[in-house]
Length: 522
Ligand code: SIN
Image 1 (cartoon, rainbow, N blue to C red):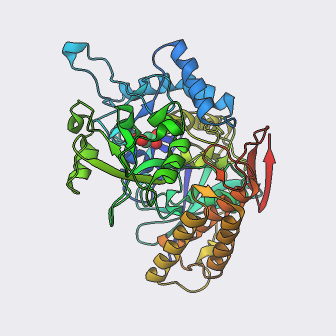
Image 2 (cartoon, protein in one colour):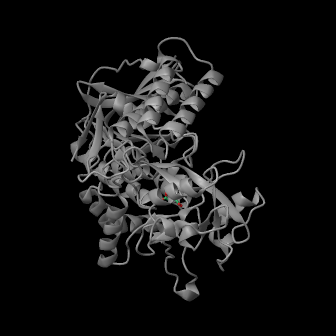
Image 3 (cartoon, protein in one colour):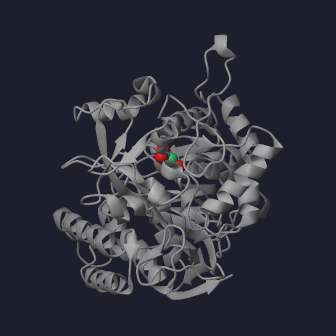
């Protein structure tokens, strides 16, 4: 296998909103390599439908956005991080507008103002959207257009990150697999993990195939602390039909008036929360699990007198394949894994517990979302914390090292090679067991069963240096930390619900896991 060593100033792993937001800043001081596993357009960012929450309505709106974020996070939000998010958000979104992001606007004859919608647990309509329900895609496209014009950024597609390279306790680079299976070792003055979430750890997810928690798993293996991994947000309304993908039915549908009804045609959210269909996501997801026949309920927009095809073109196109139409039919939905509030533990400046390693976006855990993320706060998170991490990297990165060529053989390469078919079966088993035993409603028996299942899978871990084997190892790493943290948290808070511990502790603590040790810190 080829082994080539490359040197860059900054290595950015992930080309979603956090990675690109950082790369744009890093490019002003050095050579930046941005790597991504598939095409540049394929990231969780590009799948975000609903929008980007941003308080552009002045100080009162900023204060309310902060309070909404704090309330959704169920006592665990890091207030400093949330304040930075909502205060710096408007400036970062102004930048996006300057770079050409075309958020939806009212017609020029009606003032041409930006359109704003409302989603669950927001006290105001402050969510910008683009092309109706393709906000993430529009942002990704405009960021990429901007980045492509910058000479010091190199973009590398179809590249899988395998492991961090740690020398004397400092992260100095990473091993990568290129599209042809060649091994590349990249040395960098600082490394940013912006590799997104890990929805693929569950059999049912709204996330694309690339979301296998690579950055989090690599960081954890490298010795970094991860935090709050038990808090996985299950989006309440992913489409469900035999053989159909778990396509997201955006919360914006409820923002535009959709009801949730059970199989008897009754609205049921009044039994669960005063905000009804716009209650926090964890509340809605659990209500659906309780009300639904096989967990399935229906979105009902038959009473909504709006041009829903124009407002939700992507969703409408998807539903048409199943001969369904918003405004005419009941749309079957049930929850699916959507967003990881936990991740690599960082401060608000993107620093992890390992020198040289930074993280931003869904791969990171600043505590900004606490135990449950407020709808449409994640694109803003990537934008704001990607920029902040880049500023820190610029300030702290050491000068270029003249250390000898790195010779690194990733651990995963040792031994034989598991067939791709066997690896796929192994991954499917892991995802099923996580859904069954570490999903929306948890208890000690289920979580212990998940641990036994993961131990059995560890004994048959796929071997070989190819993308799916690397992903299998990463999924296993992330799943193991989720289960250990969920078992350790003997309370119910935000997205983490224990049937055997339904109460909430008086004091909210973050879980922190590092080198196999779990602790809870205030
Ligand atoms: C949605 O459109 O419902 C997803 C937005 C988000 O996850 O914040």
